[in-house]
Image 1 (cartoon, helix red, strand yellow):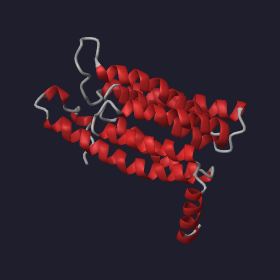
Image 2: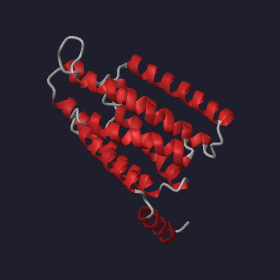
Image 3: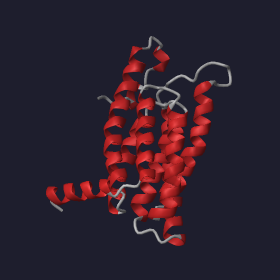
Length: 217
């Protein structure tokens, strides 16, 4: 597929976008912008988008893992909303880096999620993209869990999710949503850099990342 054909398909896909998908995309982008700024409004705006995408994935596109993912987003957004507002000690939840234990838990959580989702898609659904669908969903499951805990590394999981989702949604004919993930990729990289700068600006040495796990810009 050459650039001219790709551009034409993008234009036609945007023209064919329903108003429901347009609303979901707009609120999805707004939510990520709020997340970059560490603003709690990331959650109510995100919930609008995820509820709509749960409907789209199950009802329109047969992206079953992505549909379950968006349902998970909605539940975790409610949890994240609560966690960001106040933690158990009555203080605002603080942004932190992953330690070694966090990385191990993330890796296990991701691999197990991917394996389960892939197995379910193969055995119980008519998914035509089980590998990509399950991978994108597993990285996003991990990213959402990390975001709810205000871990800086949540952005790395979102970058992986977004990169895989671009061709996934394009293949399914959801061109405008595919374009949304291009925007999300850029915003996720910017979010990663912005949250790292916020951490670097803190005077608390304990908030700095473990030396062997730090990833430079």
